[in-house]
Length: 278
Length: 343
Ligand SMILES: Nc1ncnc2c1ncn2[C@@H]1O[C@H](COP(=O)(O)OP(=O)(O)O)[C@@H](O)[C@H]1O
Ligand SMILES: [Mg+2]
Image 1 (cartoon, rainbow over the protein chains, first blue to last red):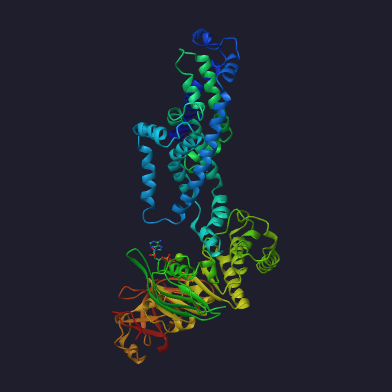
Image 2: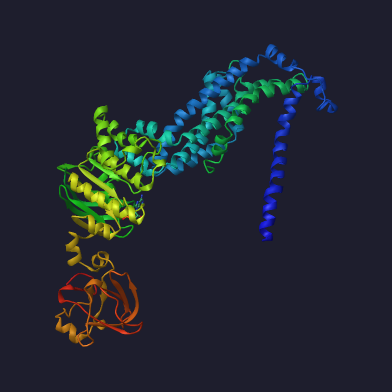
């Protein structure tokens, strides 16, 4: 009796407090960043002005007028949308094949794909830069960024789709075969409608990963294909520490994705737990 | 309509062989039941006929056509799955129409077929619902409807009643029997339940470990089981198996029981009470299950074998009292002790 009572107290009082604390710790930097983006660079570094300051939009107008925010934003949208679309375009048929027509080496292929994520990006930085610049002439092109973002995310996308497809009862697929459905019809009329939630979660995560990617987008672009990550990076150092400006750029860069994430929380949780939460 | 022939059909998964050289002819319009314990290969055999499993060896023919390499939808078969396997995101109507749409039938034809099947199965009012909003029995009907609308040459059922409750099972069993009567189409039905097999089948195929043990009409299997496996699988309660030491030798001789046999099988319903002097078997009463209509009398013989007698009335005896039983010579089945084969 007392044990149950303790557990109840633990879970009704202590756990929520802990959850709020953790949430606060995670949320504070974002909060601070948004706040700072409305301060002048001078105010931004003064601790006494943490909460009390005269808000200004100066950083934002400055950003759009002098730093070409919209060009970076458009590049981000283009590369992210096309990379996500291409990743799904390749990922759906691959995951379908592995989930419903597994061969003897399907497991190995899945493991191998995951293992590519273990390769440190820095290890291939030089060949990637050298080859794309000097041989392929793709450096700083949308095509290259879309390709790189797609390839980075393909393993995780295939894994996610594979697990979602696996949840579809085998008999339903077989019923489709008895009904004489074509392969394309099977994907379109049976698999995708049944894995719709999973597909949406996967697309969303892929979108977010593409949007946030910084390692390659910063290093493989200069101007033409530069994304918002590059804009933040570019505002980081050269003229000293301009916290107000940097915060405004960062806020404008992560803003869209935070809003998107907020509206799709449910899908995201399901996506990140590979469908374990229902 | 079509016959189905299996010739030396084999199936293995890697090194594991699960179907061994099955030969079987199913006549046009016949209702055939594959029966056997769980894991004996019934579903595998059915799925090979459906085209959902590759055939490792041998030939399967439907009508005059060898179908080994023919796609499932082109074999003229329709299947009802154990789990129903309805498309959860489609309405009942579309579940039934889906196959016809794939076959590119004209819309009018599809509509009339779906509505006719729905009428027969009493699911017309649910046509616009999704399977989620249906009870188990209704889902089962939709699954059958989906098979009917395709107007197949052969119906395949894989344990279609196993997810229904007892009362519904009896009802649906009857409806499947009616369906067969009305359509006259060849049907192959898989079950582990011998009652379903006995009540539905024109022909029963008893399977064990991927081999056919016996093929025959229900009554043939009941009267003349080929071996002890079939004998104890068909009929409920199970046939009693006894050995020499359980029988009174004088009365056994009087009944002209084959002295070479090592195992004697007598069905519970064929045991009759008698006097101590005329008893073939005498055993102490263990307990009585009285079902009103009849009573099941449980005993344990001297050699430790459990046996059951089915009697019209419970005996007037207490636990431990001797029960004296006999049977007609014709209803005593003799089997070889080593091979289990009928003598
Ligand atoms: N995909 C598979 N891989 C390996 N063994 C299988 C597979 N499917 C079925 N089996 C084996 O084949 C045997 C027959 O299975 P099944 O036809 O489902 O039996 P039943 O329907 O009579 O219960 C079983 O021993 C089962 O373990
Ligand atoms: Mg089975």
